[in-house]
Image 1 (cartoon, rainbow, N blue to C red):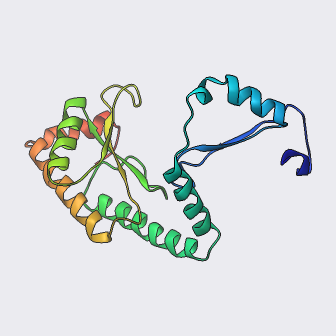
Image 2: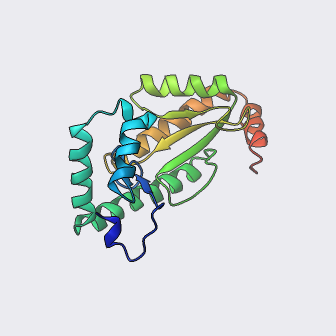
Length: 191
């Protein structure tokens, strides 16, 4: 049993973690204190009654683990960091309402009203850019924003095209500079 090999052990200790963020796969890991606990949860736990095995998730998890244990991980991290830095720099240069400048591959660009956000997402989708929208109740009312994720699957050119296309759309929505100022005021950003 795994838990018996741990430097500390408690009979009521359950360890759980997800694989979605760090490993970019799906599913999770559950470690039980003993076989009886495992069988009780597997047999009676709501989430496990209709459990099915997904071979693709297992294969992608194994592949992700291999990358994390190899030297390839530092190359991939360096590449992703360069793309994050580029996105932050270009968004600022273009005057986009980037809510936070962080070392995260997920960005939030404020658009204000919900209808503006949905319209932006649809127009970007028609142009081949797939992004998510964050609306109430995930964010405060009228603080809708676009969630853009950067990954190593994108090139610097892809990021440049997206940001330039988005900037062109903001000009359509903000025929008058007043609209852009209103959005900035909603998010309390200085010009």
